[in-house]
Image 1 (cartoon, rainbow, N blue to C red):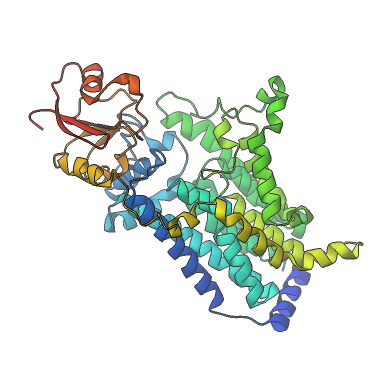
Image 2 (tube, helix red, strand yellow):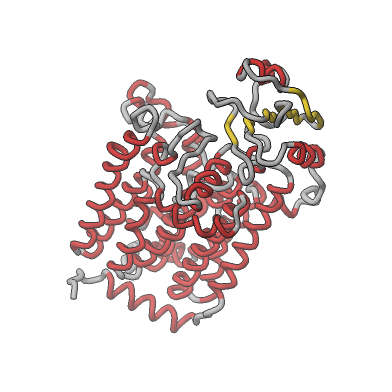
Length: 473
């Protein structure tokens, strides 16, 4: 049996048991929260899909990846480039576990459902942990606040990313840390190194947290595992498989760049991210060492030269939500009360504070858009989009911008228009929302410039969508 310092695991577990007896426990509350959260995100995904709302090329990329895995092929993703191995872009081999799901349901929308279920599972797990310590009502409040938090909502809005798998894994690990189950914490955290390369540093941080709380070798081994895989991924695997022979994002991970532009540390977008973390938890995360697990993620984001990483939108903050809420739970239940009574009183209302903050933040977040009276209206260009897709010959290879790319990858070989590609059967652009520069001209102009040796003719034009195909396609 491992030795634990006085006031760590046994005290936490005892506190949890006393809380369950005092407040009551509902075995169905976590299930109800998970169902509610999953339903909300699936409904949002279905609404997005019906409106032909595409945030980026990422959903298409991951759909192609899983299509290759489901066929037991190397992850060659032509959206990124002809012959491009996606394991040379980011290190996410754990996504291969989704191959059977994609094989059964070979559709890009499947990934949106998978992501919704990942968020739902994490919310249910957290609800169960919260109600064990604070009771059924408080557990449901915190579980819903977690499940509908701004980081997860913006990730859902950005559609599927590999980080979806990390949310339940990190939630399970940090809950286990909170409850003094050190082996379980390590088991939950270890696979994170195969979700994305930077999460090796997060795993190392979890290991250090375990060492801090338990003085157990398991934490040290976990920290070494995480940091070791970060080095293997960034120094060996990614450079080996990347066409350029280097880690594709090394130039953006430049901590020294801040020395030449110190003002960037105080950028408004970074401030918004930090402020939202504090508002969502009522500032209580500052009372918990669990919050230190955020440091690797916030460091690589804020020290990056890519300003797209800095703000609270996109999927980059999804991984922060389990950390923030477990830190909040730790702050409410920790056995280290402040000498100031008002701080203890404030902390004791942590569930109500987080629930209120989450509720007040909702109007500015993506999910409420589904219940907007205008949400049920058919996208004005939806009929044109459907007609454009129907005009693409079955099995044709297509060069496309991001406009309808995600709707083509299931049944066509798709390339992104910004790369150097082999001559396709068709070229499809969305002149309004596809991202193709207007100065490139119409689809015929683009086809002539990018594939000058191949003849194309306009076969569809409506609603801003233009399709040109080879006569023999």
